Length: 379
Ligand SMILES: Cc1ncc(COP(=O)(O)O)c(C=O)c1O
Image (cartoon, rainbow, N blue to C red; front, top):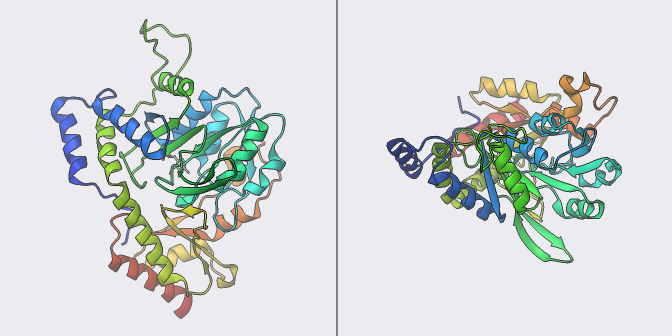
């Protein structure tokens, strides 16, 4: 079976982790934590990094930092992981959805303006499967309407966006370096991993302090067990940060490998009829976190059918996200009543992703492509 993902860790990761084990710095203090936070913030072009236990709580903490009032609205794509919408709900806000762009599968920024109301507080762009959201129009709209931008870059480590704003000129900016706050995941299938892990980035010192305090139970610096606010234990360990720090050094190599996987799949699959492949817009440098494809309806196959056929060929896949508006946990609460998002619904029905991990070999990639061809062309 060719797995959908397999992490690849190097000697430096092992050495760093061993140093923690040998010195006993295995919990949430130690030199690697700060180094990891600083190095990742600086890589993404942000001032402050606040490491947390995973990407889900990074989003929850980001929204806690902007202090939503009950009923405040946050606009996000329906086509994403539940972590995004639940972060809004746990902070007593209301998630407001937009559909996906049929090319990039990211949120359709053309739909944002119509969703803004007097209760809107923030927009949450999510860079899907390694491709950036078209951020310029989103950032302008946020500026004009006084909205916060909480960027979810969990799937887009190192991806870049070509900003073409008249005020700043053309500049490449990293995903996770454009919002007021951004959130990353370092789960084992991400471009860099700490096993489980996440991070918030921001340029705002007040938000950084608030996030640090909330992450650590709102302990007071002067009087330790005295609390004026309720926080969380969302801490990351020094042991995990030690692994992450070593991974950051390898980012150029990791991105090159992911782009090789993406480009090799495109080369081998582009002439097979009935499938839509990921794009790379001229304003984007995408990192192919996962190599997705969408089966056209003309194949008379759903993604679930196709996954079963690939499974029989020894190839593991994963289905695309099911939109937030189709999640029973939310519809039962009366959210998204009667709302339809045709692009996200098509992606959920017809999309899946192929093995895309860093350990994927050229032989395995060839086998995957031959299996796709066998199913779709030879029948
Ligand atoms: C877009 C997005 N946001 C957030 C998360 C949550 O990250 P974690 O699994 O670390 O909680 C993920 C996880 O895969 C994700 O894909």
